[in-house]
Image (cartoon, rainbow over all chains, first blue to last red; front, side, top):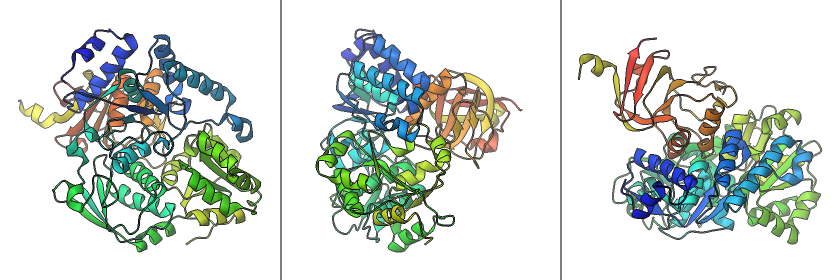
Length: 415
Length: 142
């Protein structure tokens, strides 16, 4: 890789041991991918919590903080595994909660803004077309690349932190024009009407094309999808397909036309998604007799608009006794929903709203499943339905209104 | 190039890390260090995984694809700290997270292969991964 005099200086240790080590890791990654050089970034979003980092990661952080390293660009954190106000109520592990608190304080010492949100693109920062950033959490990256036209690879925790310390990232993958061209054409004959429908589209496309660089191009989209619709589509594509980018003709900034999105090349494959495909997908979930004592809205965290919708559906209602309704959002939106009265309606109905977390990374989630007798997990998030299976839940994807109906009755119909 | 090398060498497209030798563990299914692995024992724990029940410690792992999201980046460092890391990860197709995680943890990693390892390498064979030479050699049949 070509290095600037400044980068050579960093490698000589001119900015300290931690920054030197950080750049060496980035150099290793860049050389692996054949990057020509580094590119400066304006914003970093990292995943850093004790569930994903483990004791090894925590020890690493102690060392970095001890060496006096500090972030040189604005750096925020993704959802974490504890909402400290709910540790007792959920019966999470108190010792791990203490580690999480230490980890947060170490991150703050380094200069990381512990915002604990996976919807930074809705609530914190919206980079512009062509802006280079380094974001962690697949859902944030696909949103940045696709809807905002910004440029980021999947930057996992350690290299996101490295980027925060060096202010640059190797120029490979989605930082380059070539990788951003569409590869697969998706004729969207279906008319998604619900967040769950958008996630279902993401599952259907993602599962069949599991490749970071697949870059599907959605054509024929009717109407104007909302930011929340696109959030669920992107999160699902990234989760099922490990994809880092998509285009939507007439909607996303690098897709004025199909030809524009494909960069003048022919698609490697064309697929069609119909309403029938969506119906079949919903019907494919086995409800195992129809008992349902867990409904979750999470993954990604909910926007204020999603919280408003749920509060309206729950107003004056009661969640069935023995059924848990769990919702996750970020600190800012929970606070706003309290001021706007949405939180009261949700809580009066018996729902729990957690802040700063995502359901699937909650500490002790596998144990909580057993202790609470949870099996079927009903959700409107296709992403959550994908990843929660690792913890031996039986996920069932349903539309938002149907999920609320399940919460109120404790029953789910087999379609 | 000798006949032996032609038969028992796999060329890889991209590679990073040190030269390592070890016992091969070949999977026909992809891998996520979070969702397929017990991160305390090193055992492939997800029910129904192609190499369920095998332990990855000190192995040279062959996987056609990488699965899972960004959280995998910290996982390799953590399993290395716990002493249960593999010696190398050999992927057909991988994603940046695996590469970032492996480089950060100091675990040898490669991507892309001249022919499918399942045709050439068997679990239990002793293999050498040479990132600088961009090749994998079978040293001894297991």
